[in-house]
Length: 332
Image (cartoon, rainbow, N blue to C red):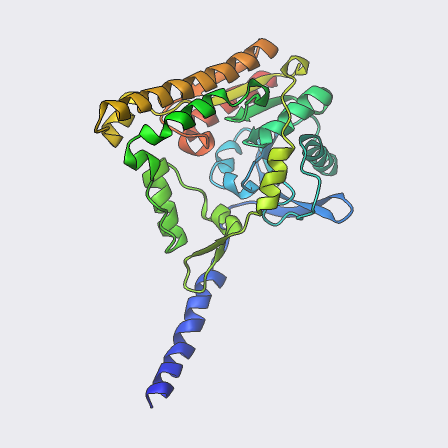
């Protein structure tokens, strides 16, 4: 009888758990289509609609769904599209094609398919690599480019990163070992992101990055290590001096040193000094990248954003939307 009751309980509970994953649906107001960019390779393209010139959003490690909360804020003055690069999400996952030039070629083929005449391209993370190549090699294909915290010149070298690593062991314990994310549910994970990072990915993006366990908790991270490694291996230094199209670039500043000291409360002089060094080197890294862009594209508009992180379109959404609006108006 006990075994019978336990089996009956499982028969009731397990299907109800499974429904947690099956009943979720993407509520973002976009249309999804797939564009073939080469034999056997299709890219997911999102279309949020809108009125005005086209803006195409290019993500990095994430899929185009990371823009699901941001894109609708732009549809009042532009028609918004997003592309999920190969190897991620619902796009094809081939074993090659991950260099900057190949990725830019994928973007150009999507623009051809959509028949977009000189759109504005806005790239985050690795999306900045697409901008570098297209703006330098195919300037007539775009009206302007927007770096969403993605204007980094790898030729500057990892000097600051190495120095930070050298002093990392002296940082306060809670800076070296940040709280583990709450993986118990997708809503719990988003709440953890808000607490720790001041922003949260759209639920639709998290569903692209993590498997859903039968009980509704987050499962395996599904972004392939091989794809991530291939993206890093394909990085190239920007040729800013060849970029002649209008440029808008956002740079995410680190949290103020005063705020960090208040939050992490160093217990020794060495811990405080390590925090000061890290803060100074973070600022120096940003300044070096800003200088490289300004020297190559003197007329570029650079916007520094405080109190956020590299996902500036989520942490500093109103500022980014305002600047994008003015950029679009200035082009037309």
